Length: 568
Image (tube, rainbow, N blue to C red; front, side):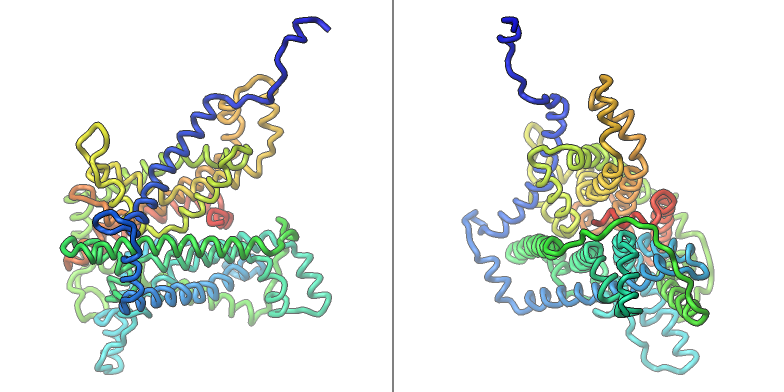
């Protein structure tokens, strides 16, 4: 053997390109600074006194206060109730759409997603206009039946539950649809051959096999309901945990109460983490190896059952349309007081919010657009790392992505206030006094959708295509640009559009960070409504619905019901 070959150093395996290592480091730097640090800071504040000494005093005060304990209990009950109501509706809708053929099935499959375009803030306003004490329904009950006292449809926990159910049941439906499409139909056929029919087959075979999707949907519904404070405030409910966090933080007079708002925010994060860990453990201990994508042969319903299914779906979406109708009537109507419908109709409210004060619309589009750009720059490389590499830390990155999806927006908003309310090194400005904090917090809130959309698409692309390009000399960056992206662009686009859809209707996190001139549409709606300018609030609500509907239409055209995978 030649001496030159003997002197050659032994191979150490494939070298990781420097650009990949730099990108990996930058992604983790972003996650540490804008996700882990704010959450760590909120826990630090919760476990320390004003002097900075470690103490459990704040938590002792919380757990010995009956009002806070009642708020915690009410929040848990409301979350469970929302899971139950959305489960009944979501599972029924998903099962009908994926297993049966009936008139209007394709239309109903599209309508399933429509409530997602209705932010809870807009939804509760629409319901109040129609079902409130002086709303259309109570006015008609008084005129037609002489009802002396209005029926309380909205003001109380029942109103919050109604709004959350109508807004969130599509999350459950989409998660169940995605899971049910993976169930091997032969298992159901085998159960039917053994005598299990109808409800028993569904209960013992189909439903248990959809557990991963169901748990994902139930977790989202629970945490979303648990963390929503805007809807309860509008209908006069204050004894909920998220509402107390908001009310305690926005008052800057009593430092003790302000500190309790931080403690409640830390509890919201801690409970969200516990819920996620319990859900993942529950799914992990079961075996779903029989799940596989298969073409499902839809069965035709009998005449009576067919029209019963159509009647159920029509009634469901009629109720879902109530808030849209209410907001639209309030946006174009004048003189709507103690009358079933507005007395006069006008476009003045739209002119005021879109021409005279367009900042709400401009800011929403700008901030949400920048948030999506950040999501793409961070989320797509994250998805590639998670699906294509065995890099140390990819598991932690995956877990953190799931955690972000579960953390309440209320807690994130408060965490950013505590973490970034200090001058940045080198400049005498805090991040919270710069408008760019809003795109950042929106990007952090909605990053998981871009990651999940890209990740699910990357799993469908065989690695041999990328390896073939690298074998003929293409760098990893060029391979990703010329081979991978053209094959997964639909998943990336769906994730980005869904991030935009959820960012533009975000209120819980941004409400704490908005300063004068930075107001976005949801904040404008809330401000107008609190000030008594219901027409302007409704007009902004209609504009928000249109923007969300356009995004949802594109998502549905590209991904259809497969969008359920974004939540898993």
